[in-house]
Image (cartoon, rainbow, N blue to C red; front, side, top):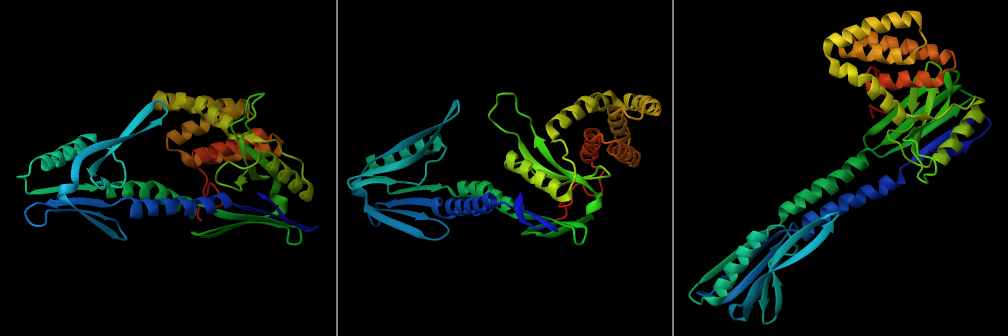
Length: 367
């Protein structure tokens, strides 16, 4: 996300996922190439009774190649192996190869698993070579299943990535006093609008803070925060350059003349949610009912305890009282927001998302 246009009355942010646009067709291309060109079915037929010839046929989705050679040229059949290491494991694949007076003739074009089957085929071929009374030899190797798996992972993954690649545009227009968000992708166009006075500011959301001295920077995304405490992320996933996101956030605040909001770390919020939710989820109904009564009394005495809001909302949601939980979190979010306690408001907004209590969790969900 970067500033693409700026004037005294207009500021436009735009994000194009060029990496996804480039990688998606590449993945689909790899899936198609492997599934249609590199794999297929291979058949070896040798007939002493009629032609005294061997015919090997390699076929795939687009073509078929046939090679013929005399049975007398056959010398030996053997199994060749290929090893590749993946971490601490070593994977062995193999293929059957016929040795003739004119050179090697692989039964298939790729190495596959199935050492036992390949060994039996090589033994069958060697028995045919050594026994002139055996009239016919028929061997086949079908690797089309490999193509299906490769197509599923590469082609399917590329297609999913392509369908989820979007161009996001966010416009702040002082002349109309409107903020307009527009998302364009292969699956459609989605649009969201709010008035500029509704906006509290732009915030940088983080996914995983790094330790001191760590060169790796956390992933980030930009989020619009409304005065009600509701958040509108400008991207589905975290990523990009943290420094650029911070720079864009400063430009938005300078343009709208709003104070800078502190960054928000979702990983810390998820950890805090787990600590609160786990005892309630494992304690059963009696624990949840006790928590509801206890938290309601605590909030009556201290309405500014964010952990009590969280605990009560989780217990209410677990008991099926989702409307009460939503009202509680939205009320608390607005309360903390009005006091300038943005982090507490963000915790409750995040919990609304986790408990799926928002009518539309993100503005781009329907696109």
